[in-house]
View 1 (spheres, one colour):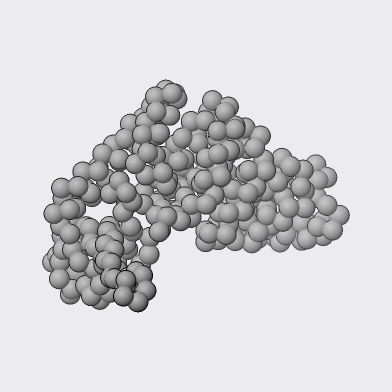
View 2: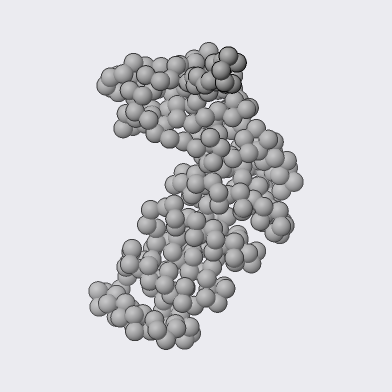
Length: 298
C-alpha cells in the first residue's frame, strides 16, 4: 500500500457518512473507514486466527463511486489510491467517524499547513526555512507530492544537484506526481532540471510523464527541448512532430520545427517529413499563437 500517492485538498468539515442513494440533497461521503482481514497463523494445534485492521480515507467522487487511500503510520492518507463502488464501500468498509474527527482530520490539516508554510518560504527565496518545513512534512508523509516537489525545487534553486537527484529518483516512482492537480509543480520541476543541466534526468522525467499522462503536446515539446540539449536531434524532431500531430496549431511547435530546419539540425532521414508537415501547416494558414501553459518555458 505504499507505491504511490497524491496529496489531497484538506476537507473543511468532518466526514458526512450518508446512505446510498441519489447525490442530490446530501453531502458526498468523505471520511475514514476501516476494514478487517482475518488470517490464520501457525499449523495444526497451534493454529490461531489474527485480525488485522486497516484504515482508509474515503471520498465519494462526482460520478458516485468512491476513491480510497490507506492511512500511514502517522494516520494521514498516503500511498496508492483506488476506486471502488459505493456498494463495496457499504459492504466491506466500516465508518470510523470519531477516529476521523479526533485524529485523522487534525493531522491532515496540520500536514497541509506545514507544506503551505514551506511553499511560502520557497516563493520568498527563504530556501533553508523551506527545506526545514518540507522535511517536517515528509516525516509525516514521505510520499507527499507537494512536499517532494517543493524540496526538489528548493535544492535546484540552490544548485544542489546531488540532493535534487535524490528527490528526482523518488518523484519518478510516484504516479500521482504527474496528475493534473500537480501540473504547475511538475512543469516547474522539469524546467529546472534542464536549467541545472540535468539533461539525463529531464529525459527520464518526461519519459515517465508520457507513460502516465494522456496525450499532451506540451510534454512532447518539453521532451524535445531536453533531447536537444543532449544533441539527440532525431529524438528532438520526433517529439516536436508528435506535439504537432496532437495539436497542429501549437505555435511553439511550429517555430521549433522551423528553427531546427533553419539551423540544419534535422537529420537527413527526417527532412522530407519535416518539409511535408511544415508545408501542410502553411497551407492551412498561419497557426494561432498558443501560450505554453504546459510547461514549455526555458
